[in-house]
Amino acid sequence: SGEVEGEDYRFVSTSEFDAMVERGEFIEWATIGGHRYGTTVASVQALAAEGKVCVLDVDVQGAIAARSDLRPYCVWVAPPSFGALRERLTERGTESEEEISRRVLRAREEIEFSLTTRCFDKVIVNDDFDAASRELREAVLEALAPSA
Image (tube, one colour):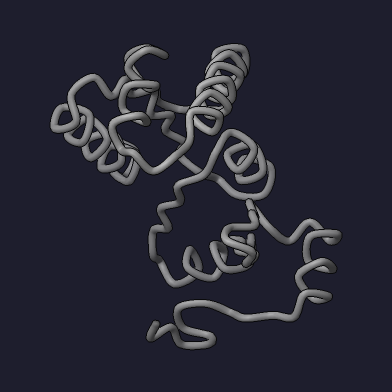
């Protein structure tokens, strides 16, 4: 697939990955299609040290982990309603009804959690994709702007 060790990914053995999980080195990790993927705190810190901005797409647990080790600007992109979320997931046609129900339930839990914590700097309701995209871009640019 054209991925280069040390450039696109850092490939490690299963035992090393397990050890990294145990040491808490990941902001977030998951098993997808039988393969394990993760974003390390060190990789984000290395980009920051180079003056680069790292954009991560993480769930609530990833946002919490980032908050504990980094200084992120966290944005929550929420569906306009749970009905709209279910409809969007169904229209994709990529998941079973059981998986869709599980994702909607998880979204309910994550939204409830996000409302009871101060985990996110900004919440954007994705009712209109173009408007939500503009709002996200503006929020990121504002967060990156030097303080007056």
